[in-house]
Length: 96
Image (tube, rainbow, N blue to C red; front, side, top):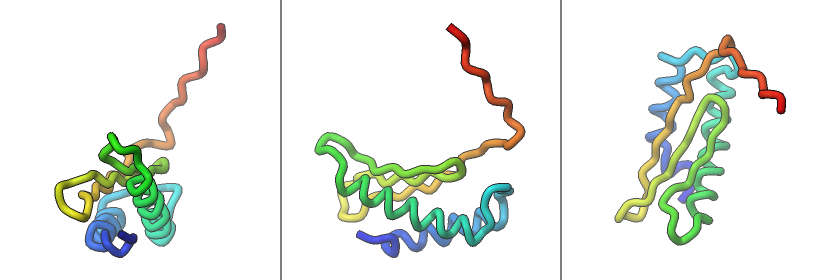
C-alpha cells in the first residue's frame, strides 16, 4: 500500500481544496505536499496499528486523513478538512 493507492481520493481532495476551502496557512501547492505527507503517516499508522485497532490516522491543523479497516485488502480512506478560523479566540488556561 502506497500513497498512489489512494490517488483518486487525493485528487478529489485537491479539487475541493482549490474550489471551496479558504486557507490562510497553505497554498494549493503546500496543501498537495501536506496531503502526500499525511497520507504516508496514515499508512504507517494503519500498518503498525495494534491488533485490536481498526484505523490509521494522521492530521494537522487543516486536514485529517483516516484509513479504516474493511473486509477487503484496501482500507477505506477519508480525507477531512478541519474547519477553523484564525480569528477564533483561544481560551486562557485557568490559574490554580
